[in-house]
Length: 159
Image 1 (spheres, rainbow, N blue to C red):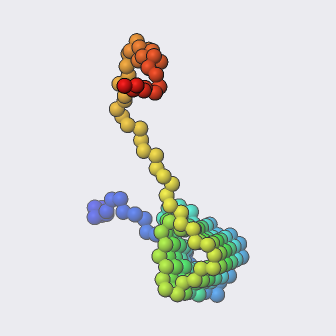
Image 2 (tube, one colour; image 1 turned 120 degrees about the vertical axis):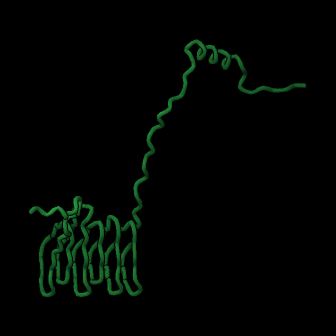
């Protein structure tokens, strides 16, 4: 009667939005999931969330900045490109602007007219050790200080 064959913890299917060839968008775009572009966008394109992926086909053209965790370019971009995780430049990719990336895959034939800037992960701070340093009793600390004060900083051997 009830379907017990469902798998628990299955990820929801990824949603892909398509901007088809012949479509023009004038304005900024903010998306989640996947965005596939075959048309023209005049404006900034921003992917929101760690799973956001932007794909520009060989027919796509964007005039504006791109910003997403994962970006695949096989078309043309006039603006800065910031890939928070991974940037893939296919053979027909043409970028007029600076490129910021953590991981880069670039095919033969791809072109960039701008700076390429690698963005490494920020250094991670190690946790403090659990063990603590044994302290000397207060009386011993003061005695050690007095001995250090009596001892000359430089010792000479006049023999």
